[in-house]
Image (cartoon, rainbow, N blue to C red; front, side, top):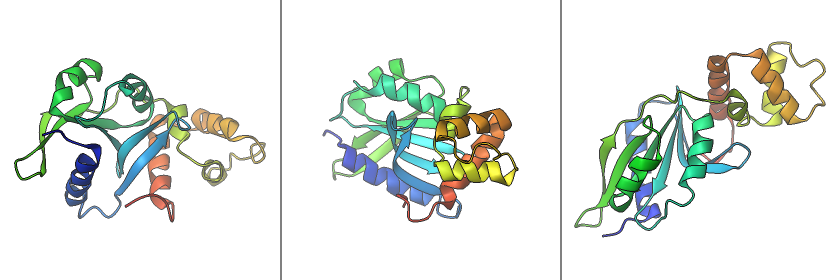
Length: 191
């Protein structure tokens, strides 16, 4: 039986909520836009890292996946692709070795079960500039203000503010600040 995005997404949310039940600082976000909207990861889990989940059901194609891979590799700490069985061979050829792969299959009673094909590893190639694009302009300015680095940047466009952040902080610090800011947002599109 063919899997559909909505069925996989629903079960993925159930699994992720269960997995992070006692982690109060975990944020689960659907359709997180990356690199100013170049791509959207289906589900992002933000806590001590940003773990993206891309869904490719049996009903989907892999046509957009190469472009998604390029964008996800710039921003996400780790990525897992959750796919219908029909795409498993194609996905193995396309995704980097550090991406996790889970196979989603429908059971006889119409439930979705996941089986791990490959565990994810840390992303070896995060791009700091792409990462800070997750910050809204006021959030990026607030970060500069916290460290008294805002002089000359208050009225600058956001791309200049992002450049200043990349010049001023290590990648590890930027990863921490971006995660913390995402978790602080109020009335945002998160579970």
